[in-house]
Length: 341
Image 1 (cartoon, rainbow, N blue to C red):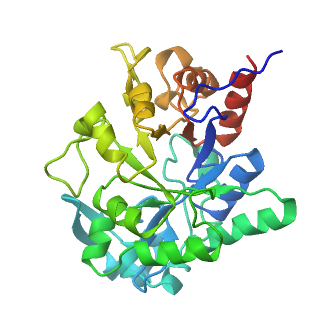
Image 2: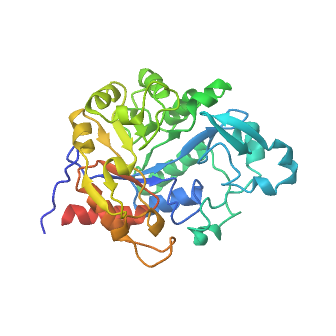
């Protein structure tokens, strides 16, 4: 069987980025989820980064942690519950920036989507909130044991908000990445953000490859004059290429769905981004029916398992350079099968 060269920007095989670890198989953003993703063969693991009161980077989906930890069950922290406005939206709950690292370490992670992933919810209460340094240590331990270097793909969560309260991401993040050998353009590391300003600032401070995230609606929280729709035009992509190496689009911007929930024909986004010399890493591929196009669903319930590999192959055929998935085992298989068909 002839192995086909993937139509990526570089001609190399597309990357598998484990979204919050193997979050389809373990509670997300735990060392266990990252460890499983590494075992499954992911090229990169992806931690979302927020900060503690004492300035430590930790891995959480959001800085509001009532949905991802057992903080609501801790009476000693009941007085920390509050409402905050972040990126123009009201949030009520408990926030990492109101806890020291020592206090956060008394909490335990829980499944964010228990109705969709009840098997993961069985792991509630088993794992701590990991620091970014602990995530990097895990990668170094794996490299020492196997000789294999797995990459890291951190996202700065709400960077403008954190900077406004004196807890900017950039300095501690870059220092840790440098300490653990992830500080060059050729190192297996990308830094991603939905905001523009912090990526532009990072471009002046580091050689690490940067990725501009774009959603299918709205715009960057730090730019009232710009929409994501503006950013994915050829002119917008050229602007992104001035400070970033890649684009991380919602997958619907690569292939949208029709009224029946089936995949439509691909858009020109991948080709347009490649013309601007940007790699394209769409998000997020998940195995459960609730997330899948109609034609790839299986069973009857929203939580039933469908054919996510078939969905991934449809996107791989567009020339994407990598993909974010909660299911890195299936993603690795899809990339391998696509390359040998």
